[in-house]
Structure formats: C-alpha cells, structure tokens
Length: 194
Image (cartoon, rainbow, N blue to C red; front, side, top):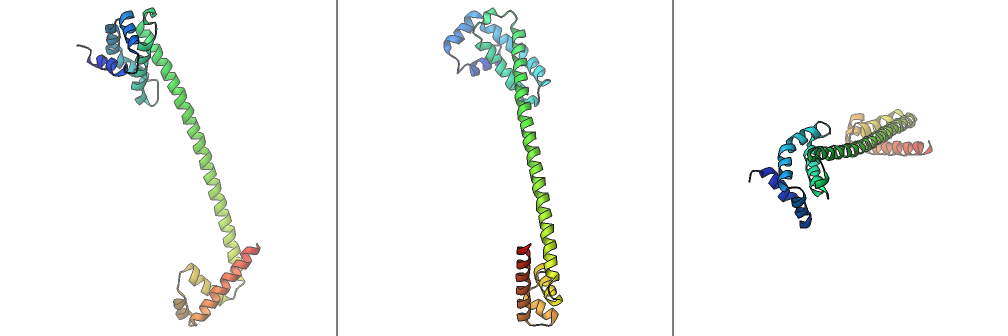
C-alpha cells in the first residue's frame, strides 16, 4: 500500500470511533480520498499552522486533530472542497489554541507580577523592621557601661567565648557572664517597651 503515513494515521486514530462510522466514511467518501488528502496536505498544513501559533510545537497536534474532525464529520459527502474545509478546521483550532494559550500566559504573568510585588513588599517591610529594631538595640546598648557594651559586642557580634573575652580584657569569666546577662536583660526590657 502506497499510503504508509496516512494508513498509520487511520489505523491509529479510529480506535475510539464506532466501526459503523468508519464504514459510513468508506461509503460516502472514498477512504482513498482521505488518505490522499492526508499525504498531500499534512506537511503543508503543519507549516501553515506553525507560522500562526506559539509555540509551534503544537502544530502537529492541531493538524492531527483537524484530520480527526474531518474524518468524524457526519456528512463528508456534502463538503465540496475537502482541502479548504480541512484548512478551515485547522485555522479554527489554532485560533482556539492561541486564545487558550494567551489566556493562560496572561494569568501566569499576572500571578507572577502579584507574587513578585508581594515578595518585594514583604522584603522591604522586613528590612525596614530589622533596621528599626537594630537602631533600638543600639540605643539600648548605649545605656550600658562601656565595659558591658564591649563584652556584649565581643560575645554576640564577634562570636568570642566567655573565656576568650575574659583573657583579652583581663577580667574573670564570672564578670563576663554577668555582663552578657545584664546586656541581654536590658536589651530585652528596652526592646519590649518600644
């Protein structure tokens, strides 16, 4: 048989179609006419559709669906120009596809834009709140003695251990512990009040 691609198309695509309809197709319009139309128009139709839709990868699906709709048409014998009718089906399907694709793309863009704005707002708010809290912490720490400030700074911001601070400042570990505790309690009270 000469029509390998079209024969495969008909064999693969009519599994869900009632046998009686296939017989009607065979009786009303010769099966050979459909097979020939498929062989002659398939590539041309794919090219035609590829130029009008994005992404063009969907063109094969649209062409396949176009042929299916043509074969499933209940009165094929009433159609004067099958090729023109086939191209009209494909064009209508591509318009529907584009409309659907455009709608989903716009929805995704809107969601992305809203989400980006929400994240930027949240980030800006978080940064502003963190800066304000840092200013309040700095103000609270300035109310402490210079030794207590130094101990707290070395411990919390530089990561020094109590023993290392004690050795560096020539004071006892107990004094370091007391001053860290004093600074934390003071900061907690002051930040809780503000």
